Figure 1 (spheres, rainbow, N blue to C red):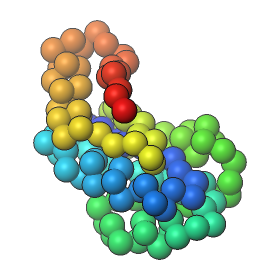
Figure 2 (figure 1 turned 120 degrees about the vertical axis):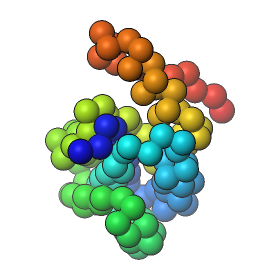
Figure 3 (figure 1 turned 90 degrees about the horizontal axis):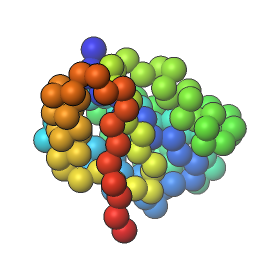
Length: 118
């Protein structure tokens, strides 16, 4: 069972998904699974996701909006922690490592978040 489930809900994000997925797969912390919830994309997104093979788990569902897709990913997650990544964003390489180190040092925490930048 992975420590972290990275959930990526998306709809028609073909131009962006490779950057997002590559940023997760390049993490220095490696105890994670990647769950991509395709919310009924009509562009090339499904084809692009196939290229990642077993490195990701893809769930395809009818379009219901981001909350619906995110909730489906959370329902199917196996990790102790959930990390939400929007399909047009990216993680810095040490994001999960820093958050999990903080979680270990502060077991009373139930939620850990980071700042963002453009």
